[in-house]
Image 1 (cartoon, rainbow, N blue to C red):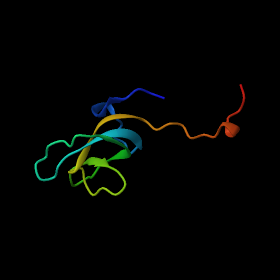
Image 2 (cartoon, helix red, strand yellow; image 1 turned 135 degrees about the vertical axis):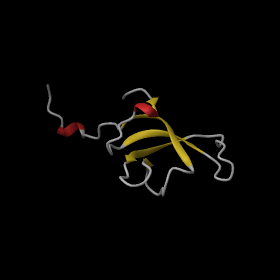
Image 3 (tube, rainbow, N blue to C red; image 1 turned 180 degrees about the vertical axis):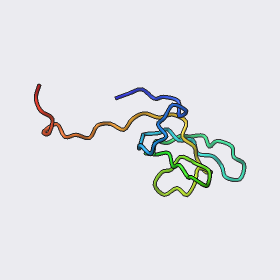
Image 4 (spheres, helix red, strand yellow; image 1 turned 90 degrees about the vertical axis):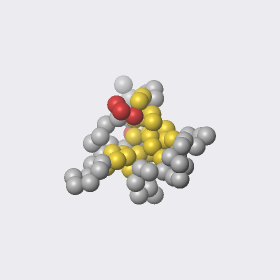
Length: 83
């Protein structure tokens, strides 16, 4: 597996990635004292702001990804040809 990288280097083409997300208090915008890992992708809106999207999020106002890495390969070992 790859190492965690700054979110600024993540692909912005809709590719799903693993991200460390930092939640923020909506009222103050200050970071909460924990992070979590989620699958996210860049949502490019042609006529609105673009943003990081994940399942069950409407926008990026409550959390923001800060680090990322590619999703692991889910190919079952039984499907991989021996070398």
